[in-house]
Image 1: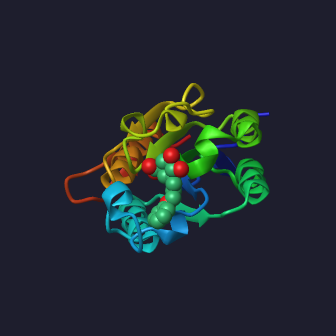
Image 2: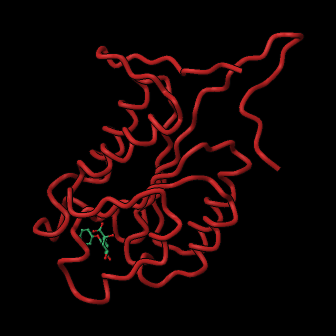
Length: 176
Ligand code: CA2
């Protein structure tokens, strides 16, 4: 059943704020501390703060969640549907190359998502070249470091018809 995009109060309908969930897979909590040649110097907190403040400027809720556990990520994806999440940005990290179960969870929710990788996985070891997520994703960003998350968020905002002005404030194009 499609999730409601608005609530009705009397005869008027009120648009709900759009909600974006950012999911980070295993070991991404270590960002900024090790392997900067692959993953850059930004910490996970830096990335999350940047996404949240961009979302705030646009009147969109951005929630960030990291786990080192496959089942916990799957539970969060399942929960997203009940929470009314409109869009997911996901870096499945090591699970990119192994997790049919996390893929199945994303497929089951039907929530559109973009797959993000900090490093260019295609320029690395062959086992990183295959992703269980890419064919389901609206798009994939790899190799652009933390900026990849920013670009993925801009894509999500457009996809959700969030109008972003030059001042960073927003209006949604349609209010049902
Ligand atoms: O490039 C990416 O974003 C990856 O998803 C990162 C994963 C890797 O398994 C994928 O192939 C590509 C690894 C995340 C580990 O993150 C660390 C961060 C700092 C120090 C050590 C690991």
